[in-house]
Length: 400
Ligand code: HEM
Image (cartoon, rainbow, N blue to C red; front, top):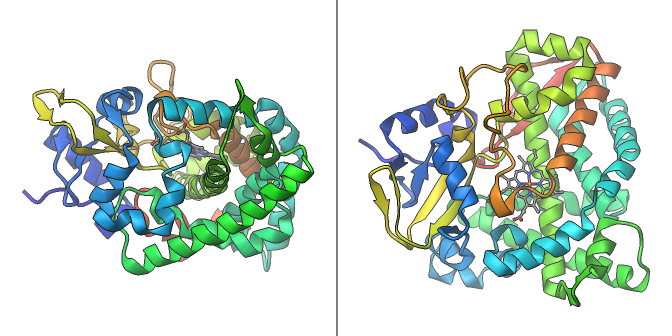
C-alpha cells in the first residue's frame, strides 16, 4: 500500500475521505515525507497534551523538513524564536509574557471597532450585488482587527499584509518549493523591518495596544529580547489573520453545502455564537501540527523511537467517529461537554487567540446575515488554497 502523502493536492480540496482511510488503516501510519501520521482523536490529543514526550524541537524538525542548511534561511532565525515552536521552560517564559499582553479587556474594547470594520468592508466590497468573500472580507477583516490590536495603522496593511500571507507555507510542516521559500524569506525580512521601526516608536511613546504591551511586558524582572519581540509580533500578525480568514471562508462554504443550517443562521443570527465551534470542527482551518518524539512511546502496539517526527491531524481528530457521532454531519445541536474539538490545539500551546477568533467569527457572520440576509455562495467560482495544513479558500464569490 502507498504511504500517505501529505502533499497530495487532492487533500487541499477535501482531505476528509483520506483521513477516514488513515484511521481505518491503523493508529500510526507512515507518510511520503518521513513523518509518522496520527489521525485518531485520542492520539492527536495526547500529542498536544504531553509536552514531555512530544516537543517542537524546532531545529531538528526544520532540518528534517528542509535539510541541514535550513539554518541559513532568513525565515529560520525569526521562526525559531516564536512561541508556537518553543518547548518547556523557554515556552513557559514566552507564554507568560505574551499572555500578559493578551487580555480579555483588549478583546472587549475591540468589539465595537471590529463591528465597524466588518460593516464597512461589506459595504465597500459590495459591487453589483456581490463580492469575493475572501479578498474583500475574510482576509482584510482579521488583518485589520489584529492590526488594530497591534497598533498598526490601517494605511500600512496594503504594504505589509500580503507578506503575512506569504508566510503561510512556513507555518506548515511540509517541504517548501524554492520559489515559495524565497518569497517567504523576503516576506519575513520586510515584516521584521516594519516591526523594528514600530518597536522604536512604542518605546519612545507607549500606546494602549497589544504591541506596546509586548514591548513593555515584564514578569519577575524578565522581558522579551528585541529579537523575541519582533519574531512574536510577526507570529501574531500572521497567525492572527490567516487562520481566521481560512476559518470564515470554510464556514461560509460549509453553510452553502448545508442549506438548512445556512437558512437557520440567516433567520436566527443570535444562534451564531453557539454554531461557531461546530463549524470549526466540521471544517478546520489548522489541519495539523508536528512534534518530535523525545522518548520511546507507543500508540497501541505501534512503538515509535525517539527522534522521529509525528504529524498530528487535528482535522482528522475532529471527524473521529469514536468521539463525534455522525462526524461528517454539520450539527449545531452537538454536545461538546464530553469531548472538545481540537481546533485550537490543547495543552501548553493552546491557541492564545481563540477567543479573539471566536469573536471575529461572530461579528463576521452576524453582520453579513443582518445586512444581507439573502446572501448565497456562487459555487462555480470557489477555489481552495493550495496549502493543505493551513486550510481555507482563496476565492469564494457571494451574491445577494
Ligand atoms: C480560527 C482561528 C484559529 C485557529 C484554528 C487557530 C489554531 C491554533 C492551533 C491549533 C494552535 C496550536 C498549535 C500547536 O500546538 O502546534 C494555535 C496556537 C497559537 N495561536 Fe491560534 N488559531 C486561530 C486564531 C488565532 C488568532 C486570532 C491568534 C492571534 C491573534 C492566534 C495566535 C496563536 C498563537 C500565538 C499560538 C501559539 C501559542 C503557544 O504556542 O503557546 N491564533 N492556534
